[in-house]
Length: 420
Image (cartoon, rainbow, N blue to C red; front, side, top):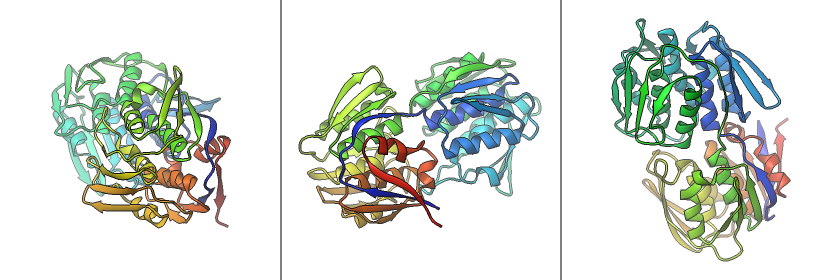
């Protein structure tokens, strides 16, 4: 099992390039199941979750070809319209193939999703929406079975709460449904907009992506397309915080600043200097005193839950008390105990973490519990005195493409080691 060995206390300098968004790549790959024709995708990050999705597409019958960072997927025939547990047990996004498979094949058998332990992510909203589109659903042996032998039909679907994967799943199902589908209280995340852009290139008729109401006029079939995945805003945010917490001078390139507005606002309030270094680049410095700033996670365009752990690491180095409130997931403070082991002063009360700072961090042996928690521990290790050993880095490999190599090129003393 791989670990990261980090020698802290080195300011990051130079440039870091952001990869394509994992959370955009996964639904884009699922969308390839909607057409017989080839779909070419650029800027796909080769992270663990993406590799799992590619294996799943091949299991379904798709041909996958990769060359020079470009993926070509062709699902000319769906041989197995299913997502088996042994393939998707480590990936939350397995439910994304449910909508495309039942829309194209009239049947899907998908294992209930696995992944990291940050709390329940029930897919009941996906399932209720598919039922409204005419699918018959049943559950057996840990699998969801969806059947629509006569095809799906358009309907008005209102999500009781905002769900990104639910919006994406129903959007992909609706593009081949008969008639109009209206998705109400839909997620507005950039990844949803990116998926809609791909589907439109494939011939789908979609209006309103990026708003809370999406309208879809179903079509009989979709064609192939070429599409470039958007920048990963969570990776970009992680690197911006890395520059600030190490008191470096870092330029984060190939990002989309418009997708980072909420984080940039908080960082500037905390005393971090962020300037535009180009149309797709941000420069970050923290030369003065950092001050504590509260944060509450919200659906986009609010403060992203996927940046909460990283932001908390930064707040351990800020003067004062910050209250970080998690409203999306009920169990997303699993990194707190590890940060405390490194010297942080954090108290958890329900869905709030109270962070008192600044506290000097010291290197320690710590364990990653989930994807974003592992990123926060990397950041803490970069800022700490001495050596940090981060175990279970397979979590971070699920969503960050060679993060240790990118950080090392900016001066970080970080390397991957393997147990013998």
